[in-house]
Length: 414
Image 1 (cartoon, helix red, strand yellow):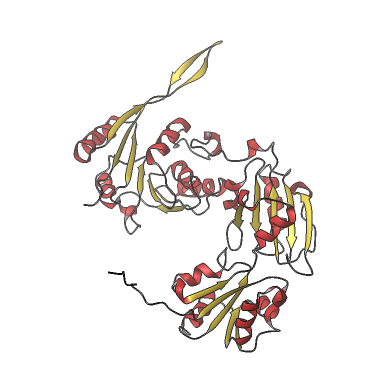
Image 2 (spheres, rainbow, N blue to C red):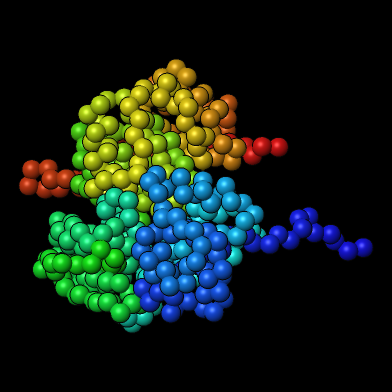
């Protein structure tokens, strides 16, 4: 007996064609033929101009808002339609946006070399060794975690001003020795490359279509973020409400972040736990709940300074601030665990298989954690740290207040 396919094959009605600065001359024969026969072609104004020698049908330049263009494409479901994009439509392009609404079997994609591939070929860089970060509609601060000593980063520019803004930002971060390459209109007759050090500033009169390749100085370690948990306490602006470095490292280990997961950080203080959670992976997300407005503002500043401007900060007092949030994969409670309803609400909201970590320094919270362990399981650990301090003309270890940590995993759904 043979297995029958669950879905009958579908003929693609939407074709995504990647086009470069060399225009229609760089397209494959198949792409040229499809474009010449297309009844309806959608793309940016630049893409439509590049394809103009072949286009015979109706065209639509991407409107504002962008979603209206997507709606126009979806309204033609089943009718032959072409969408033009830069290089590879599925690399920081429109392809993934369309794939949210259109099954892949209904699309044919004919990519061209991406701007990143062209940049690496011009510079002699191994593409697989480079980090790629887009600043198109995104905050420059999210670039910071990608900057590592001797690292190479490709930055997709928003416009002709991006190289100037980026060079100044690098200098402000102490990374003025970064070697920068601005590559303009790659793959076309007007291609150009400009190289300079960040402290020298970007050249004037750059083209709007460009990307920036960065070579981070090998001696820049003190100005970049380490890749392990436990950033220095001095890296955070705080008022004393900060999970200290050693305890923070243990706490992040207990929370065990994985790519794409969501953390609730309840009683955020300086936001250090949620910030380091998000630094674990670009896809990690966090919501920080903090009652005091001055701390809310401080958390946002810390998040931007340390490269995770996407941290969501909610001003509220738990458990009220936990309402209407997406269910978390992990929860950290650094303050307020003894307040009525906080642990119960958190445990109920936690996804099956999710982790909860609570730190306590006062006896009342410790007592509540003992009851929580008896009810929901998990482990209790007491963590003590002593630091060497000066005592007169001599030195001795002064113990910090011990932290009792409850760690539990919610049972998987049966």
